[in-house]
Amino acid sequence: MILGRLNHVGIATPSIDESIAFYREIMGAQLIRAPFDMPVQGVRVCFVETPGPGGTEGTQIELLEPLGPDSPVAGFLAKNPAGGQHHLCYEVPDIVAARAWFEGQGKRVLGETRIGAHGMPVFFVHPRDMMGVLTEIMESPKGDKH
Image (cartoon, rainbow, N blue to C red):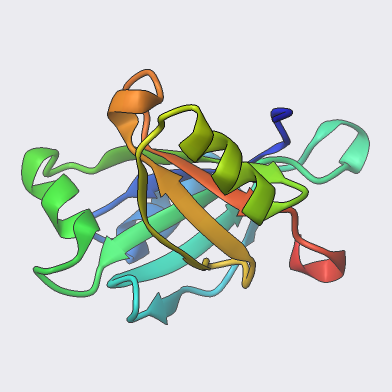
């Protein structure tokens, strides 16, 4: 297993609209994607783009707002009402091989591999097995999905 690119930092928020205003007005974000719902995962999602060095692509910030009380993000917000860092997402070239590697290391993979907000396969690894950080593993996007 080789550590891939940090794709995004997931931030749970009670209000995507307020978070968008914060990133635009306070942090100076130039490119904020349109929010969209992911009912299967119980969240509304919005990506804030950060620039990398020399105009390259930077790491994204994924804003997550729960769609209802059963959303995993709702549980996070119940413990952290103001919101906060929810997870880190790393890219891998082969999601199947990565999942097998984590499971072979005895790490607790949460649920099935599914399609994430970038349209690519993802799975999550339990924070207790990842130095206290909920970790999303995502197959590297191809082409313009990045």
